[in-house]
Length: 161
Image 1 (cartoon, rainbow, N blue to C red):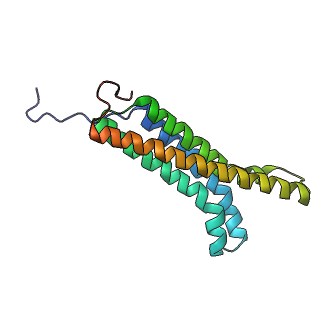
Image 2 (cartoon, rainbow, N blue to C red):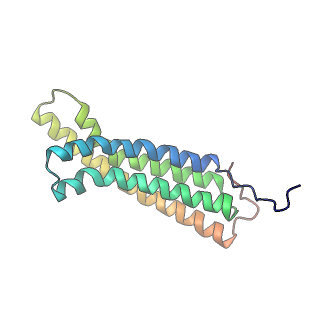
Image 3 (tube, rainbow, N blue to C red):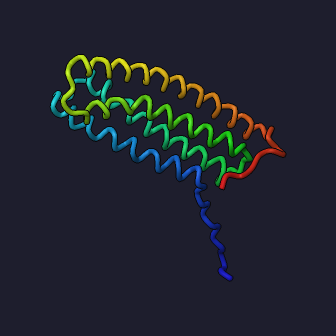
C-alpha cells in the first residue's frame, strides 16, 4: 500500500462525452466560413454574421460538458438523467437549425438566384425556430440545475452513467 494514496481522477460520463463529441463537428463547420472570410478581407460584419453561430454553439457545447462533468463527477449532485438528455437533444436540434443552413447553401451547386433567395428565407425561418429551441433548452437546463443544487430530486434522481 502506498504511503500517500492518490485519489482516482473522476471519469467523465457518457453525457459529458456526448457533449464534447458534438462540439467537434460544430467547430469544424466554422472552417469553410474562415475560408470565405479570407476572400472577404475580414470585414467585421462578415466575421460576426458568418462565424459567430458555429463558434458560439461550439463553446456552448463545451461549457455544458464542463457543467455536467462538475455536477456528476466532481460535486456528485443528483439530477434527472432523462431531463439532461432532453436538454442535450434540444440544444443539438437548435444548433443544427441555427448553424446548418449556411454550410448547406455553400455545397449546393448550380442554384439560380431565385432558388438561393428561397433557400435563404427557409434558412432564416430555421434559424428562428432554432433560437426558440435554444431558449427551451436553457429553461430545461435551469430547472435541472436548480433541482440538483436544491436537492429536490431525492428519490427520482440518478447518477448519469
